[in-house]
Image 1 (cartoon, helix red, strand yellow):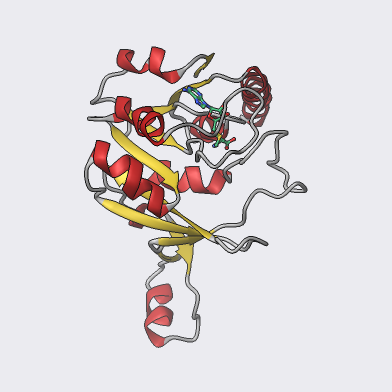
Image 2 (cartoon, rainbow, N blue to C red):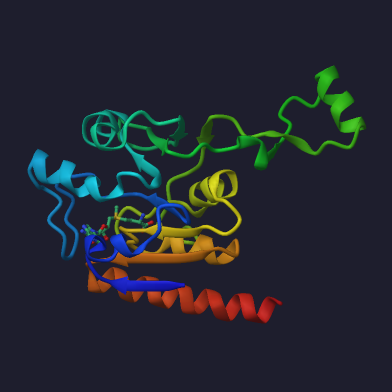
Length: 225
Ligand SMILES: C[S@@+](CC[C@H](N)C(=O)[O-])C[C@H]1O[C@@H](n2cnc3c(N)ncnc32)[C@H](O)[C@@H]1O
């Protein structure tokens, strides 16, 4: 586990394209007030933010229109897109998870069967099956203020999203790289799932929160063993 208070562009060239899976929830360039980062840059600068990812395996969480406008021109066509849907007081209630240069195997995450009265499902359960593959849309709540995983940071991604991405997409010996770590969701989930992770953020606040989150988790994992 390595977390750095740095601009990811200063370190990404050290990472091998073969052994690195980038998983990220970038700033959305919608004028959000972060403590350090100005989330309101030109179209050209925003496109340039994604250029260092070219040639890497990348999984990105974003609005579909912005993936098409800013990321596809750099990365090419995604091999797969999954929709993340959630209830919200805003009109927009879904984001897209786009997989570039890698493909998730959704059958690696099992969800419980829904219709237990269906004869085919009864037959599957009789054979010992516990459920079916997750779908290509994931209904997962936003992180609420009262949620046990909530950290004091902006736009926190639910751990279950990152867990599904890692379980379906990471190779056994991959290093997970999260360039925009924020509150450290990707490093935290990587640690829980036993993956090496490298993460960066330019914000002091993000660095401190992630550092504390990871240290706390390391102690918990230690005591649970
Ligand atoms: C959407 S937030 C990430 C939230 C994160 N997914 C979570 O669950 O907490 C985006 C982060 O990108 C950081 N950031 C913006 N530009 C950066 C850069 N060039 N290098 C590293 N971090 C950057 C911001 O400081 C901000 O913390």
